[in-house]
Amino acid sequence: MPTYRYAFDAEGHIADALELPADHALHNGPFACAGCGNQVIAKTKGEHRVKHFAHKARVECNEETYLHRLAKRTFREVYTDCLDHGEPFLIELRHRATCDRHADVFATPCDGGTVWRDHDLTRYYDGIKEEQRDGEFIPDLLLYNTTGKNGTVYIEMAVTHELSEKKWESGQRIIELKIKHAGDIAHIREKRLGRGDGLFLNFAAKPVTLTAAECDCAARRYCCLMPHITLDTLAGDRLQRGDHLTYVRVHDSRYAYPPEPGDLFRQMVEDAHKEGVRLKNCYLCRYQGDNWLRERRKPIYCKLRKMTGNSNEAVSCPKFWPRDDLLTSPRTDSGI
Image (tube, rainbow, N blue to C red; front, side, top):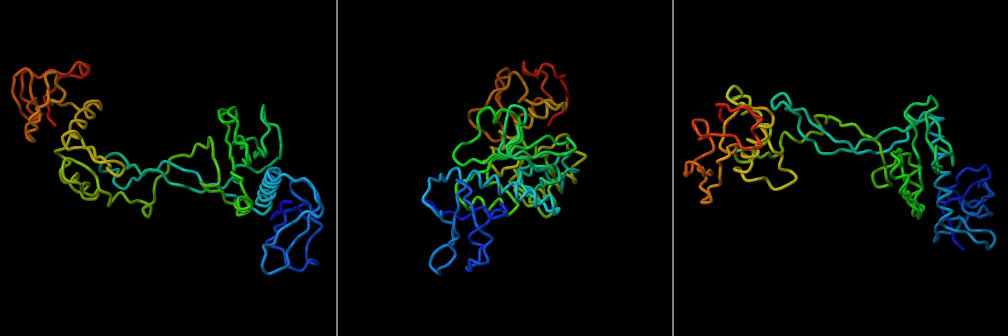
């Protein structure tokens, strides 16, 4: 017969065997099994065994049913207690993050990657029901707002069966909790569900701005047309030369090997053109070819003039003509 950590006490509340005193007289029994409903006995005496509940009589009891029913009752009991006492019930969601430390210099915030933030469910959902139909679905638990705002949230307990494809594709906010053993029940009782506790589906977490303490971009290495330098150094250089710069773009090299300077410059030229910067550059010319000799100062081979040079030759070249895919942009006289 299986033994369990949790059972229902005489008042129908969840009892944790680990929290019961050794003296049976102090127990709030009798206790009922969360799975089969039959009577169980608290085994709390003895120094060399873990406290637990055992069935009084030999009966058939399915552990999957026990975990599923226990998880539902635990969540409902804990969440209701939070609502009654004004306590938060937290879930952890992932957000896209930005940092505006140097946004005034580069006219755009830095990409801060992703960060995790806690959110209090009780601020948005002040009601909870069990096995309540919602449209075509009957979730294990349904969170709702009594004023009709914020929609609903399904709470699903995944013991062996995970979300159906229909629920997955419904667009409904769903929290699917992984319930594989009694330790997962303890997580619910902590009133905080983190990224490892389950699936948080269709929660549109808004982008957040990092605080000064969270920001690390000031000392992060960035790739530009010079050796890798910190963003603080690059920002200072940008301010000093601001009157002479038409277009600025930095490349964050945290997540991949930085591109070659020549490849990066070429990409910047094309990006600047797409963003409406008026310029002439050989990389934008239909006659442009690569100098296969890989001469650092002469990366361009002009197919029309049969000569090599740097990409700024286009500024004074009377034969410059934009590539076919760039013909919608005017021919101009500024270099980059």
